[in-house]
Figure 1 (cartoon, rainbow, N blue to C red):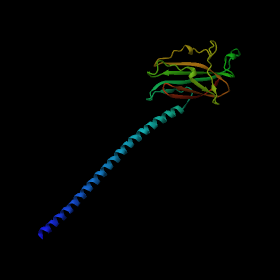
Figure 2 (cartoon, helix red, strand yellow):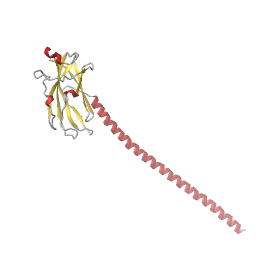
Figure 3 (tube, helix red, strand yellow):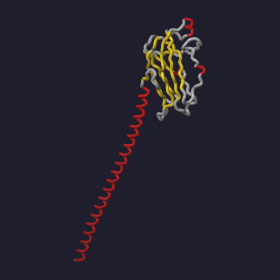
Figure 4 (spheres, one colour):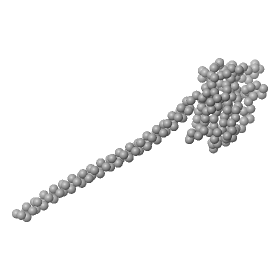
Amino acid sequence: MHRRFDAINIIYWYNNNTKKLQGAYEMKRISLIFMALIIILLATGCQNGVTSESKASESTTENKEDKASEKLYKLNEEAFITDGDGEKIYSLTINSAESMDFPAEYAQDMPKDTKKILAITYTFKYIKEDEKLDKLFVEPRSLQVYDENSLSVPYIDYYISDFYPLNSDLFMEEGINPGRSKETYAGYALLNETETIQIDFSSETFGRELTFEVPLEVK
């Protein structure tokens, strides 16, 4: 009888302790799972934080570039072409813009419907040497000119030695070295009366665009 009782007690003790061990194991397993979830959440949060900061930085850079391309530069205001790091490579300045009549004997040499000639004086400066450039030369046809009604004002690709501004020696230009600047001028054909003009300049080399808005002087 006592042996049977002892056997029953042993079985009870075994079952009871087994349940305790299983319970402790379950608690430990749950704790480990909980800790793993916390670590995953923290790691994800950090990664998202870095990603958000990176996106914010990229967005800020893009906004700065957009604002730079949207800015309207004024007369005698120096505008800069920059590289991918924001370093100033060269600059462009519109010094003057004036309209003038042209002699009747030159009418046949002007673009069709030319009312007056537009003379634009501008300065380009090579600030920092860049491997993408050998020498710097901003040719007049790279300036896209528009009147106040957004009508294109074509460049006059014609040389007249004794008539300003068609006597420019730009066709002899070879470009300037870093640290140098050059002021020059060129002639364009005004097809309509206008009080202001806009000048677009685009650098395909550096992927930058500049726009100037200047008043027109009448000579």
